[in-house]
Length: 121
Length: 112
Image (cartoon, rainbow over all chains, first blue to last red; front, top):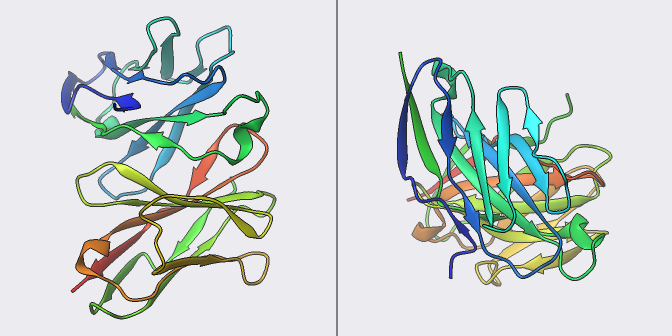
């Protein structure tokens, strides 16, 4: 079974509109972290936002927010006021911490297939 | 802002040749990783490295791959005998005690 599922291969949004990119995850670990990365056409991987499984509030970073619904195992990325420069691939990733809450330091990231976002002028 | 630096940005190599991909992680980070992304596909974990030894490796990371931190600053990935299917973008990442993983800009490896 896929650990990270991104069901939207491609999305379009009008400039200045908000867009939600979906991500669902599957883990039995009580402690885990969820990440979103942006990959523009130039290829680099840019960190956007992080949500810990025990965080009480949804994470926000500028125009990015993470809609974390733990019971549904979803961690959707919301981009507000889209800009042309937001056109890129967006990846959701998860770190599983194992049984120990503090064991997350040396864990790998598990990635989804990504969503290609195109912002139209 | 501190960066992870990868060199070269592009490399073309003949099948069967050895390649070394280089990374300079963020100086106070302790955990280091290599990932690869075959064109149009998902990002795949290769190996993690901590305290001068491999912490975890994937099934992709077979005997043709090795990692080294030769001088306390560089972190290298060596592919001994490249195959066509090794063509991919290779990302180095480093992590401190915080949550975030910082990625380099990647090395695009093309095996011909």
